[in-house]
Image 1: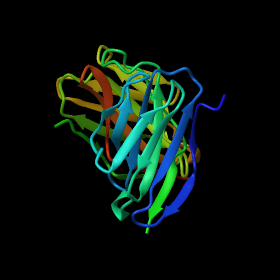
Image 2: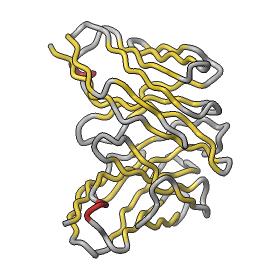
Image 3: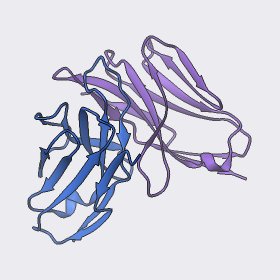
Image 4: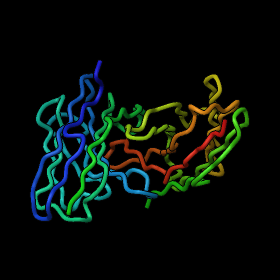
Length: 116
Length: 114
């Protein structure tokens, strides 16, 4: 049982390049999330998808776009990468996303992205 | 806005001692408080969680306490072992567009010395 799978694990980009980070979960979860992790700042929510067909902005959405391709897959796109987007990106999923649901989020192992 | 403060940022203990990590949150409506452990090169892994209708929860050597009045919650690890060395994150739920999201603390690096 793989859980949440992220690809690639590492990537180096040049400023201005674009790329898509892939995420897939096999737990039949409804909600999916993208976070970035920077030293001393914990995890910050970029975008989330409460259910298939919906997406919404989190705390730090600028410079990113997302696509909920189907129930399993949720991708994050950097259209024009900037050095400030150097970070570790984590995808997570939960069974339900409602405020009263209180469902734990399950994380992938991350994509380490460096932008030169 | 919503905020979670986590202390200390680093914690070093001797094997067998106890470790305590504390978090405070700002949104009085928060109702779910998970704790995650992150090992080097891995994603955060849920180790224990507590809901707002419960004051304490234990799972073997790990316990979490919640004080809703003071808006703080704590992680207690007893009889620490070297494999407990990791970064620990607390989180609190908040409501946005009727969706439950998490806001995370800044993390605590725990080192357990053999």
